[in-house]
Structure formats: structure tokens, C-alpha cells
Image (cartoon, rainbow, N blue to C red):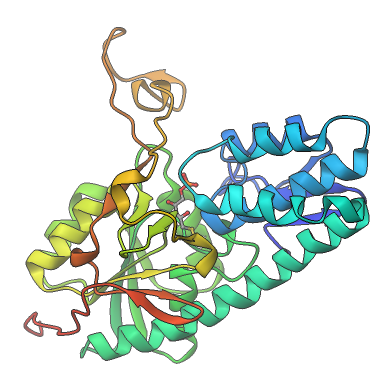
Length: 333
Ligand code: MRU
């Protein structure tokens, strides 16, 4: 299985996530401008994959030579504001700049290999947390956005838990939030689950609380874009509402991420910058207007879930935070 993002023949090659599931195609990014554009358009997306894009972008700038690499690095780091991994990847590669372009590239490639390894480990630990927090077998899991291999260099974080549990015959189905407005759940998570032969159903985001009320969800699994020191978690818009619904229904709510997503400079989630995206994402659907022409729009791409709504935040080091809720209080159907 190829990596979501990699270095091939002097360029950055990504799986174009704007084209899936209709078309599986690769994008070759030869300049920093092309890379920044791909990040802004979500052709490459998901916090860990953005960390890789940050590091490879600096490698690209350093290999090309000529321009000001530090200025390019600034552009890349600010292409999207919420996932801390992007700036983290940039900074990590930049630290090698004094040693020359090959050292920068080697550092970026190390980061890529590490990402695959760490997500596999974090999700293996998280699978144990999920099993400890639930009693029904096989499990019915709920996923929001895409935290699979497409959101990382490989393997995935929250969806990585599904791969581990499915491999042990422990998954009955995954309910996939479609994830309005860009449909990362319906387009990408569903595509990954289908590829892996995991039973799933796509649902509108608004159905998640009703699914919990009906006893159809044993555990909610999500990734993260930035985790504050106290365990507050920024993730795709709608995650906060899901966590409130999960708490109300006694459903464990587990966050899985590599430790590169932890921003220990932030004491809590109030300092996290939330990306506001283009109004057209809401005023149009597949290019067709769906609102009156002058409709006002509120389109935050992320929200912050307070740590006391979270059962556990799991990284490659084990349980990082969360309220430690571990009881499965729902009646068995
Ligand atoms: O806007 P996106 O698609 O980049 O948002 C991605 C998410 O919110 C993911 O849940 C998060 O980055 C974790 S991915 C392992």
C-alpha cells in the first residue's frame, strides 16, 4: 500500500484526496507554491499528513535552492492554522538547514517513517483502551471525519484502532459520520473501510446522537488536530457535539493521535486558532448554489472538545489525558 504522501524523484507525491472516491490519482508537487495550494485545497489533509507535508515542503525548498528557504517555510507553516503538526513538521526539518539540503530531506524522511510507526503504536494502545471501556462484542464504533491512512503517512490514528480490532474479529460495524461540508467521512473514511472489508454505514452528522440514543454505538473514535496540555482537543467541526452526546448516553469517547499533535505550549484549548473556511463550501453543493445568494455563513473547520468530555486521549506513549470514563453504561440491545 503506498504512502499518502512521499518523496519521489525530487518531488512531493500525494494521493489527491479531492478526487476520492471517484478517482484514485496522484499529484506531483514540484514547488512550494504547489504544495501550499494542495494543503489549502485539502488535496493533502489530516494533522499527521500535514506534519509530513510541512517537513517535505521545507525539503523541497532546500533542494530547489535559490529562494529564501525560511520564507518558504513560513508560507508552508501558515497554510492552515489549526493542526499543530504542520508547523511542527516545518520546524523539525528547518533545524537541519545548516547541515544542507540532504540533511533536511533525511530528517523529513525520518519523520515520515516515524509517523507510520507511531500511529500504529498509538492505535494499538487505543484498541486496548476501547476494549477496556466497553463490554459488547463485536463492537459498533462511530467515526467522524477521516483519521485513517489518508490522514497520516500510513496506517491511521482513530481508524488505525479499527484496523487492529477488525484484525481480531472484534468489529461489527463502523457508523461513519459523513462530515459536512467537505465529506471526509463519506468520501474518505468510507473508501478506506470498503478497501479493508470492514462493515460500515454512512450517516448524516445529525444522526449521531440518535444512533447513540438507540444503543447502536459502543464507542466513539476520533483523531485530533491539536491537543492542549490539559487534554482539550481540537478536531473536525462536530466533534464537540459528538462528545456531548456521548457523555449524555454513557458512550466512551476516545481520541487517538501521535504525540506530535500535542501542543504543550497551550495550557488549554481556548488558545487554539480555529480555521474558518470559504463560504462557498456551504453556499454551494457540488458547484450548485443551495442558499440564497447573500446568505451569511459560519464555517469553522474545527471545534474544541473540553477534556472532561473525553474518556481518553491516546498517543504512542499511552493514555495522555481524558476524564478516565471507562464504564459502558448502556443497556445491551
Ligand atoms: O480539515 P481536515 O480534513 O484536515 O481535518 C482533519 C481532521 O479533523 C482529522 O480528524 C484530524 O486531522 C486527525 S487525522 C489523523
